[in-house]
Amino acid sequence: MKKIVFVGVLLTLSLMLAAASYGQQAGDVWANKGRYTRLYDSKTMETLNGEVAAVGKYTPPGQPDGVRFTLKTDQGPIEVILGRGSYVEQKGLKFEPQDKVTVKGSRVAVEGKPTIIAAEVTKGEKTLTLRDGNGMPVWNRQSTCAVGN
Image: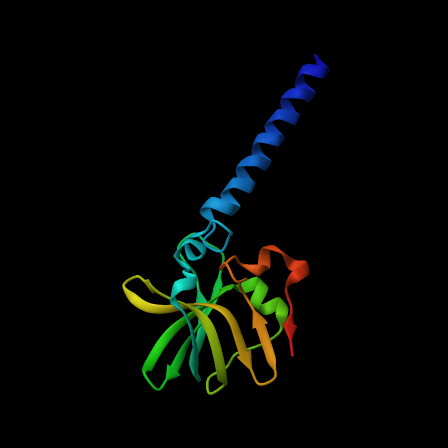
């Protein structure tokens, strides 16, 4: 009887872990298979220079916080989505209004508005890498992520 209970508990835990793992990939907008990774298109890559106008959290309903800012450019303002908030905070490169930055990313439409999903943001001598060349988030591969100079 103890063996049956143990197997039942083990099976239940395994199913819970599998469901949680699937949820992180399929339901989490910041995951490898998340909404923003699917929207990211390397064919729409561009580099923008400008000034940060406003910085804030970006929290899709039921999702972990993300970080975004409004970038003032010569062509007008545009929203820039950086990525998972915990990753951006961990890297320690903070963005504030009036910061001069260079953003490399994919221009897409989010909720009908032009938006850049950032792959890289440079402020002064420091660069925050957010996505690889295929648009995959680097925060899911912590060992390869860094703020460099």
